[in-house]
Image (cartoon, rainbow, N blue to C red; front, side, top):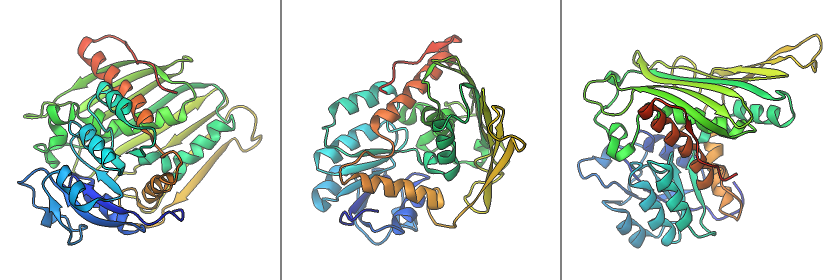
Length: 356
């Protein structure tokens, strides 16, 4: 982090799967959580082990008025996030919010238009800070792939039988969608980060195969970029407890990459490898190479690279741009909007124009 004074933090939204990991990340940084807020009165804040003995309020307004934190961290329902951001910014706070920061692109666009130019708001898509994702960005920038022809991603996770399906992230009013809006969206954001051309249209199908759950537990997307690159994304809650199956692969005219970001079980220990295949003649007799990343053990969401993402947000408070802006997040929600429209109509749907 830069020499900016260590910020005080108000944490809003303890009834969330990422609250504990984010609090663990904050505990490793020069930042102090001075208060928390949980609007759900039925939630027991004492069960959040990573939360120190700080005041816990029942609404954002009271926390802001009594504690005046420098920064607000938000892990609220998508429905409630835009209003919480408005209130925090109006109180002079910078904001770090869980993705996707709204239910629809329209909601997020209205928020963006309301924000003053001086506001620092970061949306949490930390996978772009993973060392392999940064390696891929560098390879795209130096022309390793050439023209991108195809891209393929997969995010398969354990069944909802092993998850709290009564939680608000599976409630269509609070969250809008299911597996796409919760997990598959990570890879959509990486596509927007790595592909040199925006995704211009989507064809999608969803399934809601879990009794009592109204949002989708499976989704399959076809995607096409503005330059004709073709992609796919498969996501679903299909596997045994604690098991994952993930891929993130790119195919260009001159090079290709293959990566399993997650491994069989969720966690950021051991190692992960990126396979690179040169088909453009750069590497002569050794066209196939493997880059192995050994994880540095660290607590919190995403371990050491998740911490680097939060550090980049704190550093941006000195006047730079956060690692993922509201505009960046809006590009992603425009893709999910098109995907849900396509699943409803059975047709290819154009993605609304991006901001970049």
